[in-house]
Length: 392
Image (cartoon, rainbow, N blue to C red; front, side, top):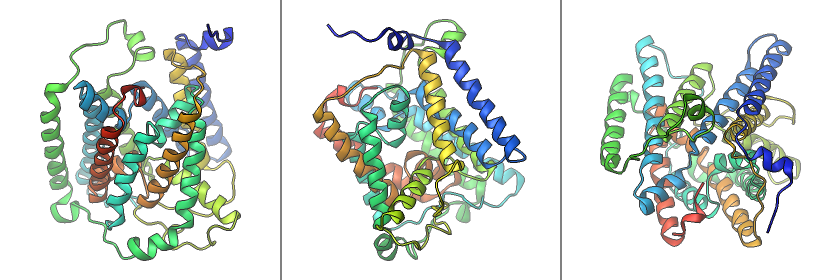
C-alpha cells in the first residue's frame, strides 16, 4: 500500500481559503509591478491575465483532446460546447466592440498568414496532443496541479519550439513569406463577420446539443465556485471574455508567443538560429517573437501568472496531488511534447492564441487551425482509444 506524506495529503483535499490566499498574493504582486513600472502596464496586465487564464483552464478542465474523446467515446459534448462558448464570447465582444465604436483592428490582431504549412501544422498539433495527452496549456495546468508527467512534456515542448525557431528561415521562405492573411471583416464588415461566425457556431452547437451533459452540479454557491469543477461552458465563456479583454488591452491572449520568445533566445545563444529572423522580430500574423535578454518581463510574467492561477484553483478544489509517471508515459510525453512545440511554432500559435483569438477577430487562420487540429485529434484517438490516456 502506497502512502503519501501528510503535507501532500492535506493539500489534495479542498482548501478554498488557501487557494484564495494564493490568488490574492498573485494580484498583490500585480499591484507591486504597477508601482515599480509607474502605472498598470505590460507586466501588471500580463500577471492578471495569466492568473485568470490559469483559473479558467483549471476550473473548467478545458482540453480539446478531452473534448473530442468525450464526444467520440462517451457521447458527451460538454467540453466541445465549452470551446464553442469561448469562440462565441470572444467573437461577440471583440468584433461587436470594434464595430460599435468604429475602431480599426488592433495592431497585434491574430490575423495569421494562410499558407500550405498551416493545415499541416494544425493536423500535427492535433496528433501530438493525443500522444502527449493534451496541448501546451494542459501541461502547464497539470504542472500547477502537481503532475510530474508535465515536466518531460514541457521540456520537450520547449525543445520543439527551439527546433521550430531553428527551422524558421526555411519555414519563412517556403511558406510564410508573402502568404495572405484572409480577414473576414474586410469582405463583410465587423457585424457581417460576427453574424457569419455566430451562425456557424450556432449550427455546430445545434448538432452537438443532444449530447449535452444532463446533470447539474449540486452544492452551495461557494462549493460550485471554489470546489466543484465548473461547467465547460462557463469556463469557456470566461476564456472567451479574457481573449476579448486582452485585445482591448492591446495584446491578444496566448502563451505561445512567450514560449517562442524564450525558445528564440535559447536557439540563438547555442547557435541553432541566426540573430536576425525575418518576420519574427517585427511580427507576423499578429505575433512578435523578439530577441531579448532573459528577465522578469511580460513574457515570463504571464507564464508565471498562469501557473499561479491554476495552482490556486487546484488548491481550492482539492485537485493538487504529486503524481509520478512510468518510463513509457515519459517517452510519450517527450515525443508528443516535441511535436507540440514544433507544430505550434510553425503555425505561430495554438488553441487559444491561434484559434480562439483568431476567430475572435474574424481571421480565416483561426478556423483553419482549429479544424485541422481537431481532425488530427480525431485521427489520433482512433489509434489510442483508451479513455485513461486522455482523461483529466
